[in-house]
Amino acid sequence: MRLQTMNDQLAARAKQMCRLAAPALFLAIALSGCAHAPPKTDAAGYEAYQAQNDPIEPTNRFFYAVNDRIDRYAFKPVAQGYVAITTQGIRNHVGYFVGNIGEPARMVNFMFEGKSRDAGTSLVRFVLNSTIGIGGIFDPAAALGYKELDTDFGLTLAIWGVPAGPYVYLPVFGPSGARDMLNIPVEFYATPMVLAPESTALNDFGWAQSGLHLINTRAEYLQPIDQIRATALDPYATFRSLYRQSRASQLQEIDRRNVLTPPDWVRRPAAP
Image (tube, rainbow, N blue to C red; front, side, top):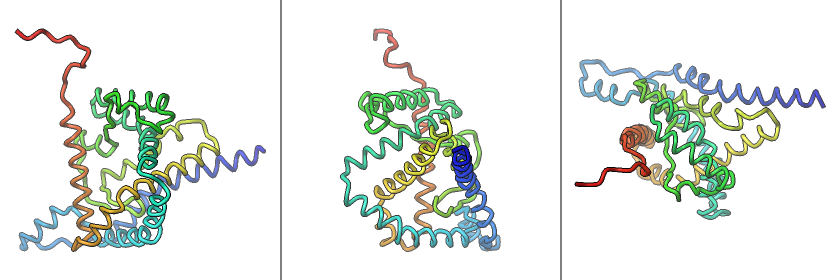
């Protein structure tokens, strides 16, 4: 019995090390192939190269092709089957459940960003949805006015002034960047499953939750991804552009909400 417990603990630690070592390994492999910058005499070409900020484009395209093949023959069929046997309502509740697990990480990131009100919203959402919402399956917090707010460690670093760095396409994880890659280990360690006492059941639950999150998210983007593949002249460049636009939009949304206004319960002076 004791030996079995030790084996379970070693297996769990090995899984953790694989998860955390993967981004560094991917970056090391990616750095082995770099795109050659046009000469500065080619002003237009050099300016476009700088704007793309994709110095390891050949390697990124290789990993994109690998991911695309895996997606076409594995993830997409599974997501299609998942859509066929579930309703949109069920998929929404799965999204609520997975999102609730990420609320503690978002709360901590908002605190590091200096967004106290957003951190309070994440805390209220986690407490309400974990209790009244039956572990996050339902979202009563949104009905009470506490809508889900999005952030992560990559956006926290951006608010601190850390530049995005070059574009990186990670195997399995997909579009990322030198700064946003750091979000992967942080997100892993910030989940309640990792912070809770070690147990085989909890480890299995963590892997099951990760798989469910992957399939549920892939199902959400079945049509948009198919449309890009069918219409884009260069799907790789399109996904790269959409990723950067999405990150910029998330950062702008955080800044837009950062308006210091009194809470609703504060008594305001009567208008003259």
